[in-house]
Image (cartoon, rainbow, N blue to C red; front, side):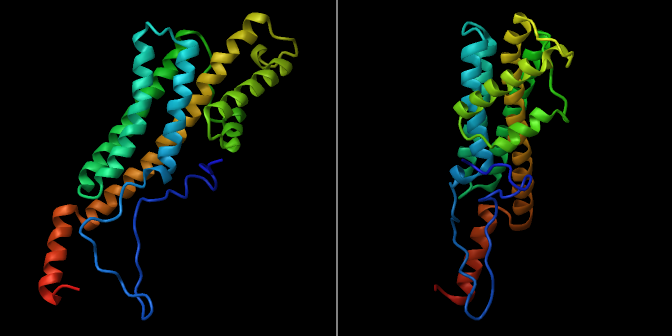
Length: 236
């Protein structure tokens, strides 16, 4: 199970490298092409992939396959995943491309977020507020698969039905119509929670990438530094 929200939005792996100086730990020569492509270890990639899997499942169940919205939602979710991966692979020779593609991934997930919000609004279903305890409960569950998310949705549906959540906590059992409606409502809101986590992680990732690019430059600057160092000290 991926620890994708432990300790808040921390633990973003693979964003920046590090070295240290010391008598027993000399700084390694700067490589022309640094390590890159470790996107599968990025928490942003893991959650974006989960958002994609959840969206494919959601659209297959609640959106007509003949609807343009079906394809748009699936493609937006896929774009979020693919652009994180592509940016990571491109980072070896172009930090600028990495930053651009990571931002495309972030924009795609924002588009997906709006589609889910539209789904709820057009059907008169509730969009959970920021303080809704169900949002925190899903974050705490740290689901790593679409099946785990679906299991959580079923659990919440059962609790809502027993507690009369759909009836505004009236103490009365909800009607058959209201209990049926909660499945798409809970599923859409669950997807929105996951998208929110992925977007927050990508915001941090973009900030780190921009800072690194500003500080260190890209491939051209690295090539210049390495060639200058080689001319000064000769090949190592």
